[in-house]
Length: 142
Length: 143
Image (cartoon, rainbow over all chains, first blue to last red):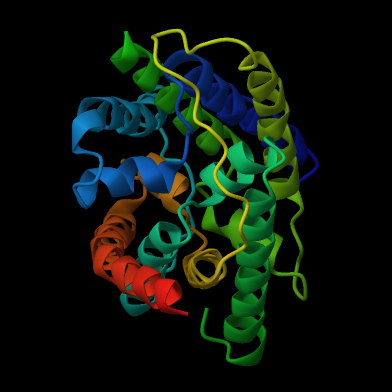
């Protein structure tokens, strides 16, 4: 537990470095929901190759690390399929409607001193906190 | 060149998500669980990620992206209904399963069957969002 924050900081630093490379290299904001969303709803067709290259990196590097370590990293994702589907739908819908998720609004927005980014981050953290409290401590469903 | 930059950025992003523990739903839900065993890790991840980005935004001043083009201009800073509504829905889904889009992609290879189901549902939600957004924007324009 004591080392968790150090790994958080190291991992966060790599996430931010990825975002910095994407911004300074290609002039784009590294938002996971935007990169994937533009690909699946057709709005980002002209930049499809870049989007696919990014997603390939996101999937391939953890996969390579897993192969090197020889043991799958822990995810602790619930086995309740209905919860997974409801959560996935909400995340997909919400991030597109709000134009961003944790990486876009949180990492790239706040670092730019964007009021929208900060505001969105506060809202989704609050909504997430209320959801966990209700579903875990009051209803005992997750 | 643009593709190499994209791949490298994606790779660092995925590696960072894995090392920081953000693909572990227990850590994310632990951060949101203020009345349970609160886990502050996500704050360190956010802090660690924002730092290089602050520097990057600073470096954009008076320059152009390495591969040409222009840097994105800041959008209007309106705190509109779409931002509030969408972020609320996203937060609810994030709390329910402990996954957001980045980690969902990064964990695709090792997240098992549930991770794939989440990804499919998330993509379905993203496709559904397009007509919803058109409707929301039309309503907003009429008021």
